[in-house]
Image (cartoon, rainbow, N blue to C red; front, side, top):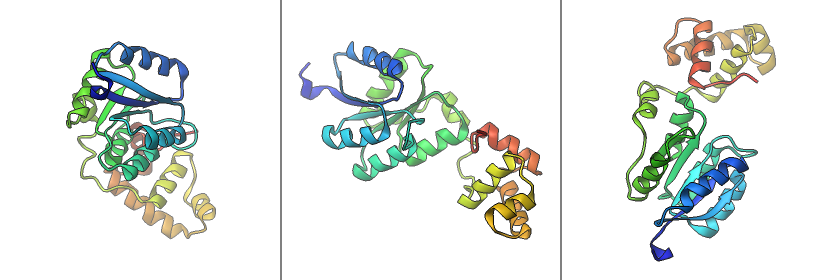
Length: 210
């Protein structure tokens, strides 16, 4: 097949072994050409601007800039960019944020080979590729109000065992303000108390403990 007719792919992955595996899979396809392999988001952005790939395969956990930020930046550079996330993580928040940022597909790295190839070809043809098990993870998330930056900050501190007083001192706000933020967090997460909020946030991937 003429190289001009091939699907030109840029993939972004910071683990060399995974990059080699992806390259081996794609190299055997007559209609797909890997134009560049990037180990970081920053490298990916530079190469995207040069190569203008048809499809970008994007990891979410990268050194420096995150995959989500990279998706957003690529979409600013090229609003029609077709991006598929390849991730180890299937948390509700990761999936939601990736799709919200502009990803047209989301696959787990434990996927079957044919799923990756189907995703690349489907997204290249203008479709989205969200497997049923991935779509199910965010079915309840759609339409729910997002946490503000301050609420996310406070929720993270709650998950790390901080009291209202400790949060108020750390953020230089009153304990009354903390209580209002906590109340808003409970309402947005659909839970009844702080413990449920932390459990829900950890389960959904909204916050992570260091």
